[in-house]
Every structure is written in C-alpha cells, then in structure tokens.
Length: 612
Image 1: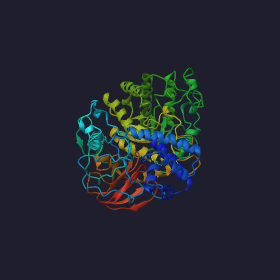
Image 2: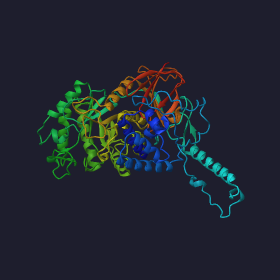
Image 3: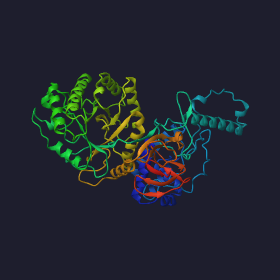
Image 4: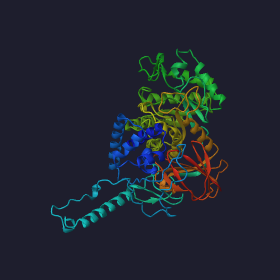
C-alpha cells in the first residue's frame, strides 16, 4: 500500500542518513533486528507511534521529521486496519544484505520448514500486531438486548471463547475466498513462506474452480530482438551505453514541424544525426510521425512543444502524403518501423476525428509499403486507456478498419500514476485486449510507454527506481497473453522525468545498468511461460517467467531452464526446487545455490538458473 511505503521510505531515509545498521538500531531501541527491518521496508506497521519515534530519535530526527512520521504512521495504521481481512499475510523472514539487496537466505527468526506439499486450505492470517475486534460485515448479526447465559457478565470466559471462534471462522473464510488471486490480476507481493515450484493453484472467480498452472504457456519462442526498446529524449545522436534492443524517435526533436518547418523545405540535420547514431550502435529505429506544422493546420490547437506544431491533422492530406513519402524514401532500409501518430487520446497531441486519422493511416501505409516494403507499420499509439472514454476512442478507431493496414497496434500501457507499480500494466493490457476482442480484431501490441496524460509530476524514490525499469520489461513478458510484443521504456537521455536511466553525457544510472543486465540474461533465451503465486507453486504475490536456452525449440521439462522471479510489493520466502544451481541479481552479483535452499524474493528481480 502507498501509505505503508510512505512510512517505510521516511524511516529508511533516516536510517541511511544516520549510517547505522539494522543491528545497531535494534540495540539502541530495544527492538529486534527483524522488527526494525520490517518497519523500514514497509512489511508491517508498528503497533504504536512510540515505536516509530524510538527509531527516529536514534537516527537523529528533528521535531519536524517526527511530525511527518506521525502523519505517515497514522495513515499506514488506518490502511492496515482497513485491510486486515484481505488474505495478505506478513512474514518475519525478509532480510537485506549489506548491499541493500534481499538476502539470499532467511535469518534465524524464520519459522520451521514448510511441509513438502502446500496445505489444502490457505494458512490463517498472521497478524503483525493485535487489532481491535472487528467482525466482517456478513457475520455482524444483530444480538438481542437480553443476552443468553454464555454472554452474561458471570461467564466472561465463555463469551471470550465464543467470540474468538466466530472471529477465527470469519478470518479463515476471508482467506479462503480472497487468498487465491488471479495470476494476472492486481495485487502486491506477499510475505508468506511458499512452496518449492510444484503444485499450488489459482481460483477461477466466476466458478470458484481451483486450477494449477501458469498464466500462459507456449512452446519455447524467441523474444522479438527489439523487445527491449527505449524512447529517445535527446537530439544529440548519442545512444544508451547499456544494452537495449531498439530505439524510438520521439521527444528527440524529430517531429514533422521540425523536419519540414516550411512547405517543401526540409531540415534533416537532427533526424539524420539520430539515425546515424542508432546505426553506429546497430539499433533498429522506430520513427514516430506527429506534430503537424503550423503552416499545414494554421487554425489547429497548438501542441506543448516549443516549435510551431499543431495537434490537428493537416488541412490538406496531400501535405501529409508528401511528407510521409519524403521520409520513407530518404530512410528506406535505414528506419525499420514507423508509428503513424503519438498519444491519440490526449487532445494536446491529436485533436482530429478518428475517420481522418484512419484515412491518414491508409495513405501512409500505401506509400510506405510501396517505397520500403520491409518496414513495419504501427498504427497510432492510443493513450488514456485507464479511462472508459479512452477505450471507447480506441474502439471507434478499431471500427474504422484502419488496423487492416498496420502490422501492429501501438498503445500507451502504463501504471495509473507515474510512480505506480509496473505490474498494473498487466491489467491495462487486458483491458485493451478486450476492446480488440469485442471487435474481432487480433493485433500484436507495441507498448510505447506512458501517454501525455500521465505527466502528474510524480517521481520515484531512489530505492524504488532501481528496479522499476527492469520490472517494466518483465511485466511486458507477463502481458504476452494480451499479445504485447515490444516494450519501449520512456525515456533515455532526459532528467526531468520520473525515472532517469542515463542523462545525456553522463554514465548510466543504476536503473540503466540493471536494464542492461536483464537484456544480457534474456537476449539469447526462448520464453515458455509466465505465472504467479500458487498457480506455479510459489508464494502468493511472486511473479515468475520461465525461459529455455536459445537452441531449445520443443518443451523439455527435464532440460535446463531459467526463472526470473520478483514481487510487486514486499518479500516472500520459498524453497528452490530440483536442479537450481545459480542465482543472479539485477543489482549485480551471482552465487551458487542448491535445491531445497530457501531464498527471499522481493521487488528486485532475480534470475535462478537450473541444470538439466
């Protein structure tokens, strides 16, 4: 929950500023090390503000910081109380190593080893602390004014026992109903101990049926070489210093109004510089059309960009036809793909009708197919898909039949907020898939990053930023069920964005280095499946995608495999199954492991390698 993260972030910042370890804080506050760790990581909420204050004062917090902490604690406490019966448990097992990564093995406080087979029923909730007695609504039965004998004040033990039984039944009931989430649905991480990679299951919410298996599974298939895409945020022609699969030219000063500032007069300098820079790095290019010149639509609304560009289509589509032909002819065999407009749904980027946009698509497709038949075409990227009106706009465009002229659909798939968990992309991809399915249109999808409407000023904390970009790509793999084929992260080169992967002229930031490691892990692999939680024999809330070596073409359960695992929120402990022999971290580092060893999965993804 965001409330818990707020409190945890404040405590973690104080801890880091103080320079004290969890052990040192525990010694000075009289708390256990595992308790201090859980509070600083947002795994549990302290029972009283006094506990928070003790940690804060040892870290040297001032009165203003204590006031902020009290507000954060009050919100987190209220949120925790309101969600006490959702079926999410907390654990004492999560640890961090000295480098800030989740520890590969649990600490001494771990509970006993779990049974080999998962229990038939979900385990009861383990409360982080006692809560005031609150019965679920379905069990709040009206009581008579005159209580029967067991509830009289002369029988206090009987009354306590009966109330305890009622609460226990209610809690188990809530866990049984809610504790088996759809692997592709929403939900954060769990912190409960889990299985060994076999067994488990998920519940079909419509029928209550419990089924085992991943969210999706296919025969081993190679990833699109350009799956690891990134949008450029610079006009310098410089390219990322970490491994990516392709670049998207937008926010790169290559809009129509900049390339053709006057009718028939072209300025190719910036576009040529970007194309040559990508060619030097052997990076395929996706060029984005957009930003109508003011001379082509003088009455159209202006865009937010500094040049005289308009959000309206050109008054005369002959101008559009001429520009498309000039670009496609000049960059034949040099630009690999074209996106036929950006951020439809945001009136700051496109303010025309769907009929006109469809006609522009048909015109551009005819020209590019003739001039450069090998180039791929992505229909205009649609945003605002979290909103019903955004999905209706997409449906109206689908009904024009324009997708028949494109190779793929470009969509703006992103979390609800700029600092939201990347796993929300899975839900949004499913919503977009429903639009295509209702209209009997099958389309592959390229995710071109956040739309213009998500610019809400949110920024990620340093602790959360490191793994956000890595999980952005991983949830793209998970969303293959919704036909997502490429992911273009937004953006490279800029500073005034929620997450900086590398500033122009500087070295890669830690998120960029981690993207490069993930790319190196998976570039030569074939993906076979993705799943979550009990459906794939893991603790609730743990996501997993499985891969085979690049030369594997047929399923082979006994062959070598690779598993990438992570959580949306929190930590979870599980035993490694047969064949596990190496564990790699996106933050760097590798170590040998063995079957039966217990590891902690968290928000920082790890790669587990299995022998045949």
